Length: 257
Image (tube, rainbow, N blue to C red; front, side):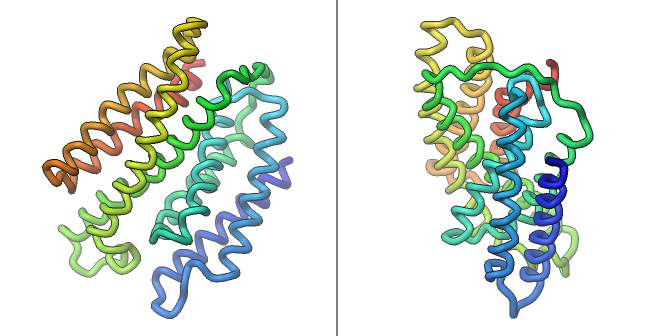
């Protein structure tokens, strides 16, 4: 398994280098055949590695495994949308963070307790993971937006200005991801709430409570954007704030445990 993890890390590092070189060169494209091949192989290796760990360990109590699973989902959503949306620049942040999440499973021991999956929650889990994926990519976009804005204000000739799309396109992409994620988060809450009422599951109740706070933050952001054209720092701060609550909902309790 360590070989799989190491090869996946190597693949994501090479993919990052491909993207950086392509984005800084007017003659290259980040979506060429070599990039696709290496990224797909890395994704397959990471999927196999994650699957083998999930057979023996529980993401309920293993923060690093849950984190790596989250980044696996983020990479799948990124892969599906990079052909339709100008989001290849996100790989400059996504791929290195993915490598760190893989390393964390190699460097730190995993607890071997494996909990059984309640199949009544499968639909809720699917909606939850997809919403975390979209909103996670939106959070990465928000981080890049804040960094891009800082560079534009303080450094006139910055490499970041040439690599990233315009701020307008960056914000448009961020809100598209947020709207997709918000819809899926809504479906996640709807499908998870009845289970809490019937079974009084404290673990699910805690997750849904923080997810509901995140839902309110994203609802406010979307409402303000379409009604008052809120953009800039306020929009990125709200996007990141919503993701913080989702992070607590999905991963926060695992840190304590």
